[in-house]
Each structure stands twice: as C-alpha cells, then as structure tokens.
Image 1 (spheres, rainbow, N blue to C red):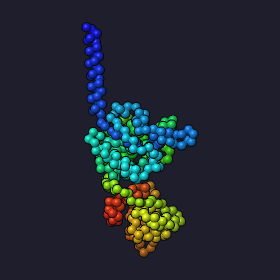
Image 2 (spheres, rainbow, N blue to C red):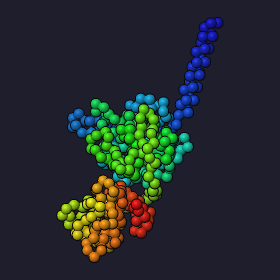
Image 3 (cartoon, helix red, strand yellow):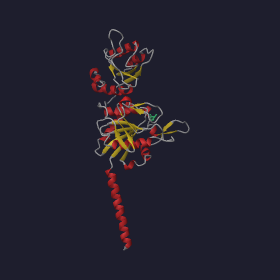
Image 4 (cartoon, protein in one colour):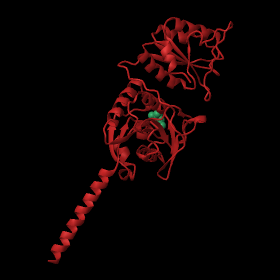
Length: 352
Ligand code: ASP
C-alpha cells in the first residue's frame, strides 16, 4: 500500500516537473540564430595556422551555457564563410531569410553570427532592406574557438538577451560585441585584433549589456528602407590618393559601372585629374557619390572647386554625408535600382 502511495507521488512529481518545464519552456521567447560563418565559427588549423570553418550554428549554441533558460533557440545555417568572402548578393539572401523568420508571430528577434571584417556593412545592408521592425543583432568574435579565451559564446548570449529585451524594441539592426551595442548605421570596425573593435565614434553606443541586463543609452538613428532588386546594380568603390591620375575612375566607367563611390581626401577633396574623371563619369550617366576616409564629420560642399566656382556637387556628384564609403556603396546600389538611376531622387537618400 505504502509503495503504491510512494510511486504515485513520484508520478505526480514527474508529471508536475514535466508540465512545469514544458510550460516554462513554452513561456520563453523564441529567437532564431542565423549562422553565416566568420571567426566565431572558425578554428586555427594547426598545420597551416590559418583560420578554417569548424563550428556549425548548432555547435555554436551548445557552447553557450544557460542560453536555453533565456529563449527557445532555433538555428539556421545560411552559409559558413569568412566574411571577407561576403557579397551584397549573399546579404540579400540573408535579409530575405531573416525577414521570413521575423514574420513568424512567435519569433521575438534574430541573432546573426557573422565575420567581423564586413559585419558593419552586412548589418547596414539589412537595416536598409529588412521589412520587419523586430530586433536583429549581429554578433561575431575576434578570438576563434581555438583561442585561450574565445569571445564568441559571451557575445551570442548577450545578443540573445538583447533581442529578448524591451530596451532593444526600437533599435532595429545592431552590431553587438564585447557588451557594447552599436547601430548598424553608425558602427565601424576600429581594431583589427582587439575584442573591443566595434565603435560608433561621436554618435555613441545605443547601449550596453552588463550582468545580463540591457542598458539603453540612445535611440537608433532614423532608418531608411529600400527594396531588394532582382539584380543589384554594379557599383564600384574607389579611394583617391596623392598623384591619382583618375584612370581607375575612367576604367570603372568604361567597364560599365552604374555607380561609383569615391573615398576622397579631407572633407571631400579630389585632385584636378580625378575631378575631370568624375565629370567624364557623370557625362556617361554614371552616378558618383563622394565620401571620405576621415572618421568624423564626413564630406561638405567646400571642395572640388577647380576655379570659377565649379564644384563636384555642381557637376552632379552626390556628397555622401558622414557615411563610410563601403556603406555608401550599398545604399547607392539599392537607390539606383529603386530610383532607376534618377540622380535627383537618389540624392535624397544621402541628404544629411
Ligand atoms: N576574418 C574574420 C571574418 O571576418 C574575422 C572575424 O570574424 O573576426 O570572417
């Protein structure tokens, strides 16, 4: 009789715990992790010393203790490449995949694991093209899984905490590493080796994650939205330099580029030969955007004057404001497609 009571007590406990676990599991928000590769998923090949893809999205998640207590995680392996091999076409595929998952009612947000070399540009591409307003956090690592202290697992944990948080509701797409949260629009990679590499300069972080809590510092910058065209136009990104004879600009035009972004010097200055090459490009119907490699403040209509008040802008070049050149290229690709090359309409996307 006693054994009967004891066993029924055990059954009740098991049923209760199972129900409790199931209900608490069911209560957790759902987060989709889309894996694309990068150092976070690489290991150092002992033979060559080079970084090789080594970890699937599923393995990545298993390396993050406690993740299952924060969210129901689903992993999508989109690709497994070093982000130096990324292309706008792959980012277009990533954007569509992320949008599909965000459209699911139960999905709270998405975490994208990505290489850091082109992460700022990839995050910006998604901030321009995603239809959903739900939170998306790009994460990566500066130290791979072979390192003494890989930083990937903590970055993934923080990103999941972030996309589940109320604070992140209106941040859109972010780049979140080493506990700092940056907007996709303003973030740049500033250090080629250090874990504290992503920064937003004078514009500041959106927030910070400490002890599992998200701290809100700033709202995200206004978001521009453009559709993903069937085919992304050919837009070239060039830097000018002392002694530049403008031949690369002319080559890009003759090669059939629809747009050219030129990282000028200072606040948007180019030499006389490049100035003539820019005029050649514009005369051929190529859309030219001028940016600068200078970190803060961007380009201003004070230069390009080759006498007589002629300036780059007066000749039809578009000033790229404070966007870095590689991001301006992505915006120009999408704007040329949407506005069918109409320079006056395209110019509006670069207005400060
Ligand atoms: N080369 C790597 C990448 O961009 C660097 C990193 O992920 O930290 O994929």
